[in-house]
Image (cartoon, rainbow, N blue to C red):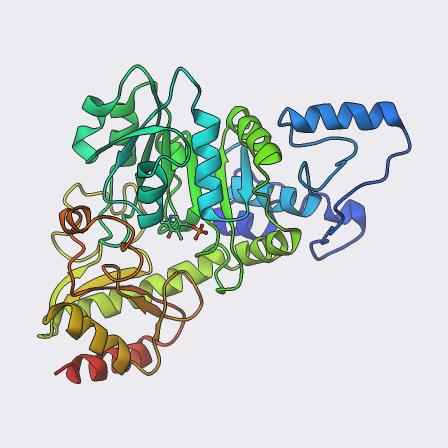
Length: 395
Ligand SMILES: *Cc1c(COP(=O)(O)O)cnc(C)c1O
């Protein structure tokens, strides 16, 4: 990258991971769709294969697309530059990234995970169901130190929390975990609003499907970390096969260039909408970090640069009222997922948190009247007009 060190975040978003392009004589990111790579020298091929199978991120010959792909590797370099980590390893989905992180962290001697609830529904299910053969202890933010054992391989937290948007203290979690590595699911913040590695997280995970992809057309996951962790993650990826497709990597890398603009603009709109929802008589409660009382640990501005583009709110009348509100919307789309250019709304109790038990849902503050909105790039006034007419037509 050009001069001035360190470059600002926005400059890195545009340039990182593109260092080899001018030598290649191209301006746009090349997409390499090869599944196999010809070799002319067997000894060199053997050396490359050995290195990649052991988790190295580079080799003279990529050998086979499950081992290395140059388009994916460029995206990984770009994302690592935004998270301020040595490396990043991309996967076919956020859940593939999380599964690989657990497999990379665990061993026969250390087969215990501490998870902090509430957390994304599929993360809860992945760890609770035992698919990966690990034992899990669920706790809350203050229970981490007590839950950690001699055989604990990893502490898993998420901030902001889905779908209630509480902020968990990353630094405090890292301190409580001691020598045990902490994985932070930073999907809701995106690298624009927080960089957990600087606060002590060993592994920073994103569902790239959300803000990083940003246009609702790519499924992806990524873990930003040290090069030592990246080696273990790549080795797991080589042998479990959850690789990211190069076309997806191209779209993600292209999306990084506008990520800061998208996230900040959506955040401004979410701040406006949250304040108006808070005033509306049909709304019982707004869950948004910038709303008074929603950030008891004072993490806004310290850990997270802003309140973000996600806003949840509870309507009077519970499940049926939440359902009617979604049906009455004309501009905002009822759909799961988040982080796209358009505004989406969904019902966590019915959809994204459905895979966890009723008791866990209730304890995590996921009420029947709760709606989660991912604010997009439309004009705030148009979104408010839509919400206002839908709130008015609930009964
Ligand atoms: C979507 C999401 C995931 C899972 O990512 P996929 O790309 O859907 O596999 C994990 N954590 C959070 C917070 C998410 O929003």
